[in-house]
Image (cartoon, rainbow, N blue to C red; front, top):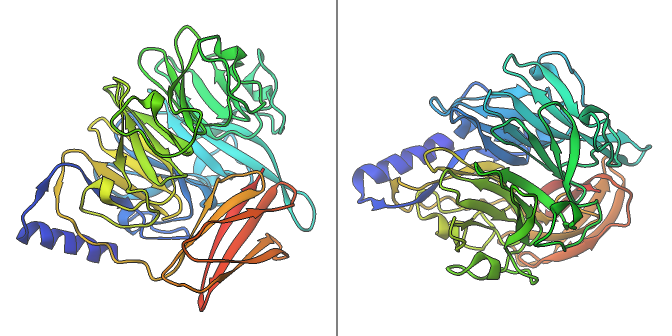
Length: 457
């Protein structure tokens, strides 16, 4: 299918006039909910919820393949994909040995440092009995340039603690984002906190106390409350930026916290004006380019937006409708779905990890192309937000059907917990009275069936 799609695009380019400017393409991924394609072109590979994407120091692309329990690597010259960490087992194991032989439980993010070391945040679960699993604390793991994996932060506790001591002895709760600066410091988000691991391995809290909230702007970040930090990124001036639900916030080099995008009301508005006056839905993935412009994904309204270094916000990808279309055409006319991760390379190419479409899209700022229609998927698609969540989820079934579809929620043992119905194209709110763990949501529409795994914290 990927070869056919690329052939069609090539024929259009040869025999049609081209349009200058940004275009969007599918960079990696052909189908989902399985693991495949290593050793071949990334366009023919399969993912299962690719939740984050990163670019290393030489321009290669890294993908956190969440439900495949692996980190994948795409060579920026050849386009060949391989697995560089994880063996598919959802158990954190193998420290001191090759990363490809290690178990990596739920990789949520990854980053590289200037020396080429890779850092991975890994959530953990334990068997809580016959019918459910319990989320435990996270780890930050390092893969050095020789390919050996080790734990550098986290003791497995679900309770955050240990400030001022070794990061390996600290509890770091559930961690969602990781970043590094040029000095070698490591920053992580999770449990409504921003934490720092310095170059000698000591962990401290930069912002938040674990209680969700929003205050403190203009004062020390250590005294501020943050609501729900997702991703984070430093600039080359000592500032640290992070997504905080419907806001983007900044900790400056003096340790003072500021809101740089978003207002007290969530939504989708404000393009062309000051980012501080704009409305955001649920900001999650975050990246920065060499000019200091920020890029973030909004998983409530399926778009990718840019905050210029002058503070102006615009939409650069997605038309606000969840779906999969638009390859070869303008990115702001394309349909994307749930982009959890954003990355940008030194050439200004922007990579989007769309975990609902099971692919990596690329926005090329200087390419030429034509609008090539992408075949509409016949199988229904299921969007669930937020992921992970606290038991309350918004479910949207995207299909051509008009009749109500059956919705079944079960645990990993197959025991049915909830059964209801949804109307295609209309959001359904689901509240699960269940303990933390991993569950499966299945929508059945006629002869079609689509499933998604969810994590309840």
